[in-house]
Image (cartoon, rainbow, N blue to C red; front, side):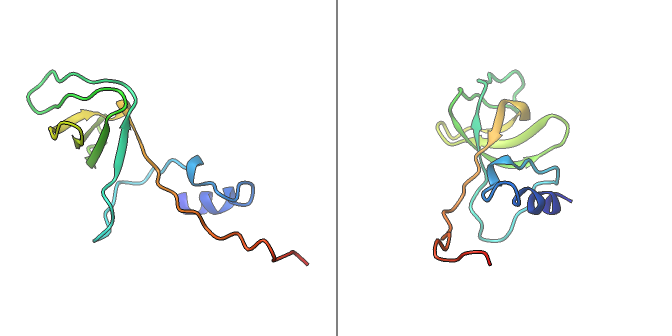
Length: 106
């Protein structure tokens, strides 16, 4: 479903990658880069299985528990554990693609 929505959205926006929010579970392809998130709200741990981070820190996400918590690590201080999912957003890495400026519609 998400892929179909993305294809339809590309009709209006040639690079729709920054407008997409997947509803699917996190998945991993062998050899892919780690998924990164940007902390948008600071977090101070309350329980021993959590970790601290500040706004602007980059987090490596290891998985989403789908209960409001994600598991990951802070790339700044190396600590890992659980954190509230809403306090970070995915960093979407896009690649520039050749646009074929000489091709015209007929």
